[in-house]
Amino acid sequence: MRVRIATTALGITAALLAVPACSTDTTGSNHQTSPSRTEKPTDAPQEPAALSSAALESRLLDQSDLGSSYLPKPERPAQHDDVTVIGCPALSKLGGDAAMGGTLAFPHKAKADFTYGASSSEISEELYSDSAQKLSEGIGRIFDAMTGCPTYQVVAGGTPVDVTSQKLPAPHGLGDKQWSQLLTFSTGGQSTVVKQTAIRDDSLLLIVFGSPALVDRHLDKALTKATAGN
Image (cartoon, rainbow, N blue to C red; front, side):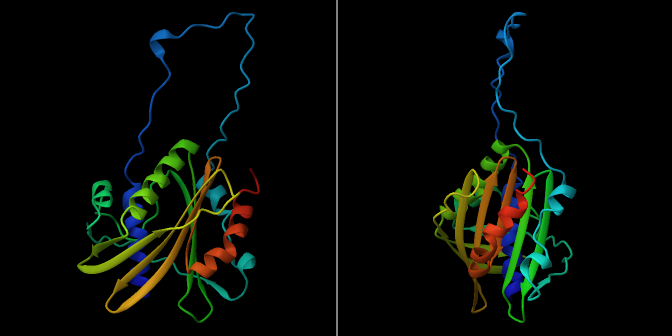
């Protein structure tokens, strides 16, 4: 049941982030003026270009980074269960139906999943790349909605899952923006606690989630490798 609960969590997150981020056009095209020939060009900093999925893949943690006790988790076939959120209007508004276990709806992405030893502990890492504004708005909207409802229920493929969420202090001093939360998924008399931490650094978004102890242990290492080429 632990795997089922974790898959539900990932699918809900993927569904919510599939909602397009709002953007504002401030170009003011009706009042553009051409600079004079003597006017010097501005030195406004250029936003880093988005990284390709292949480039992101090379920046994921692998077994050599984590140690021999971590085993890559086989990729699971995509699931297509209906998801209904009960008791959290903010989540319901963003969207409930989704392909379960998918990744977030950014154009460039990479993902790695690991199990730890003989235990049922797991850790997953996801990397995304897009404009800094889109990344921050997208993941921020998800965390705000999920932590805004302390308790709610998710019905996925006919299975009800009770969820409690708790906003955690964001890791200070890492990247440009940070988010963190603790989620408890309960069903069939069993519970799974998952920590989810997201860090945006320029045009890259890192999400590490899974067993809270494993997330805390490997977060700095994941960010260092993910941003090494920035």
